[in-house]
Length: 123
Image (cartoon, rainbow, N blue to C red; front, side, top):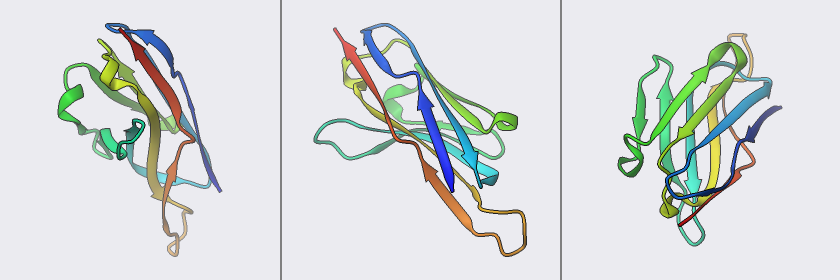
């Protein structure tokens, strides 16, 4: 079993900052993709930021220049630094990681999701 534990959400005023963290534990190896999604009430879940195994980051247009995704592969942890937050960033944020469920040849791909952390931005 793989478990992703998120932290760092909360209530912040517009223009403020938050840093989300997501740490993996359990059977996930060779993590080659990490990302953050968000889902606002009544909206579909959308990809906010992702980072490839090579360290290339990609962002949702509306967060470019404000959010930064980073990782610590030794700790199996991914971060999302969110600056200059806006009320429209209010959502539940979910982290995700993709890797393998073992180290053997027969290992299977696995994708894990965090439980979600609420980010609320008030004006």
